[in-house]
Length: 340
Image (cartoon, rainbow, N blue to C red; front, side, top):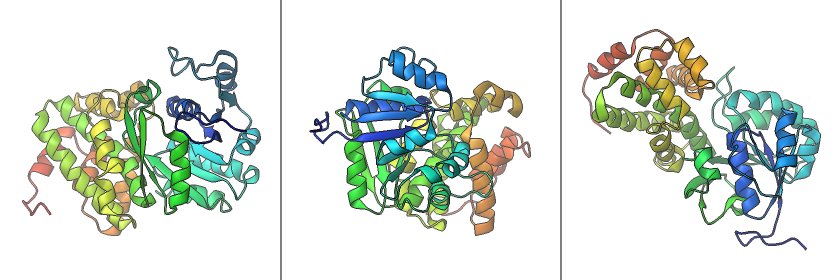
């Protein structure tokens, strides 16, 4: 008989797709909750590291992981391991791997989308990407909210949100990640949760730009508040709920990502604000999710007839249409209006 984990639930099997910092932190959380975890990574050295040394030396060399985590580079083995499949990949990798996994998955499985962003080719939500590639998996949950992988794996108090129309599915996934330091909340709005997780990176870049320009705390507070309104407007137009944006999936994630030097998007924005060329800043920071998300949100907002001046201004900076100071001057010169 399976043993009860730290959360008091029966031990389950959990499969994590992605052995980066985020996937490893989620794997450690589920393992500490008493569950058996298999992590897939395309790099065989990551799987070997997990299996032989109980570590992910590339991401967390100072952390020894629980014994109930193992690794693999075999997608078929990974997909057959568990009824709960957790996607913890960069947004651009989702479409490719979703198509590869279609033949190896089962209708009974649940897909937990812990990735954030849009599909690059058409701006589709990641839930749509996976539903199109693997239509036989009908149970999807979005896991999102203010969570830095470093703090999660170090067991700092953390809360995130699980979004799905099915209460039973949400409850089952919550049990996999509940520990004394992790508190999952629940919601039904998968669209709003995904919009918040994607566009918060755009606002984080904008906050970093303001910091790099040295424009002060007033400017950042105003930008983030009005940016949340644009995010809520966008979520509603996409079929989500505005109130989702003012919870963990939106405001919570913005408060984290747009105010901390642990955020790549924030640090990237700082470099841009200080005059570093975009190409050089990208090379120095690596993946910057906000750059792609800014362009997608701007294009989609135009097609929907939405006013997202802040998001569009950040996109203009990132694509060389305006300088950071020109963008600020433009935004400050717009006609005054009612706040709501």
